[in-house]
Amino acid sequence: MAELTQDLSPQAGERMTGTALIKWAASIFQIMGYGATAFGMTPLNIYLFFAGLIGWFIVGVLWQDRAIMLIHVVAFGAMVAGLLGAAS
Image 1 (spheres, one colour):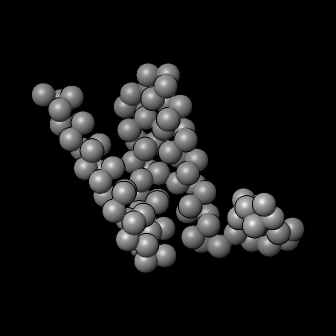
Image 2 (cartoon, helix red, strand yellow):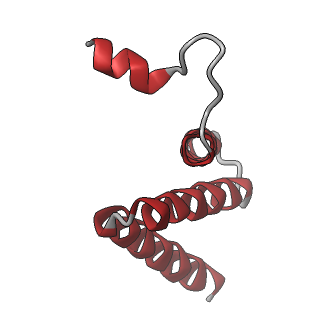
């Protein structure tokens, strides 16, 4: 449990690294995207999800984590397919 707490907040006086900042910002954007979807706020939800998706993809690249990169490339493809389907 202590390890989880350390992951959630920096120690007193400690600054977040660039990757941690991107990770948290991307997570917040995605959570806001879920909220916007729940309240029918389109296309705002797509923009929020897209910002979170890009942020997490960048984190995957920085961490050299192919699983994170893959899931966000697939999510991007699903978003594009949904947008194209809605436009027609």
